[in-house]
Length: 229
Ligand code: HEC
Image (cartoon, rainbow, N blue to C red; front, side, top):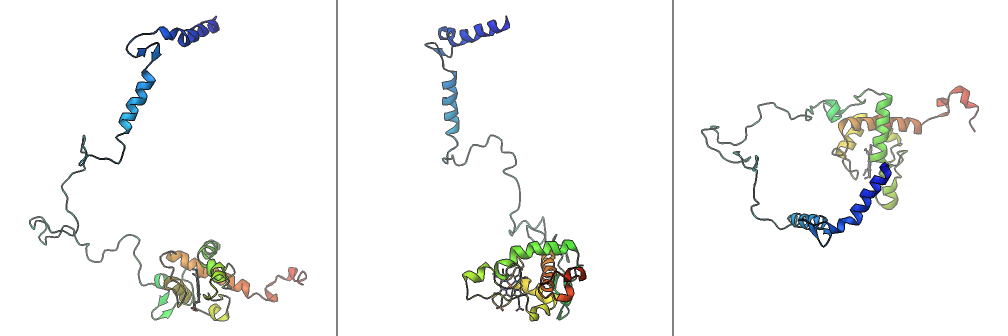
């Protein structure tokens, strides 16, 4: 008879409740839900842009503490040069900024552009280069590198170089790295958008594009030559 009993409970809650009386009951209605709404409205009204200034600090935690602001003069009994900040020790390099004057970072060997990419050619490098080239270079130079990307179609007066040209095929790898790093004439610099390793990956991929763009019949494998038209 469990079902009967629970039904009995339900009906007494729905109909019999009207007769309840006590603190939160008026006229047979429970005031508790209404009370909850009113209290939350009161509390939430504190979440407006109106602020007591300064706000009440129940627990100040560590909001106020002794400290020196940078670039201010401090008591010379603490540091005898009176500077609030210490100077880094001689020769210190910030993390990730160890950019030595090596061909890897400059694309130069002495006064000359490095002829060959200092990063070893691997399928991963070329894949990365493809992704970066398609992202950063193709808007102007198009995905095949012929200089007919979407930007020049909208701005016909701005002519990106055709990267398949012999002149650029013969350009040293370090020179192309330099073009990406610093820009050249009307080509903007991309050193802030493209990390050094990705610039070399792009150089590697550009060589692949050029090789593909300058393919001849002798590049076709013997067994596929018959299919050529
Ligand atoms: C916003 C458009 C634009 C983008 C993006 C762009 N280029 Fe260029 N690029 C140009 C223009 C324009 C020139 C022609 C510069 C000139 O001769 O005035 C050029 C020229 C070049 C040249 C030839 C430079 C020379 O020696 O004459 C190379 C190499 C080159 N770009 C490589 C790249 C690579 C690699 C990327 C991707 C990282 C890239 N460009 C992205 C516009 C762009």
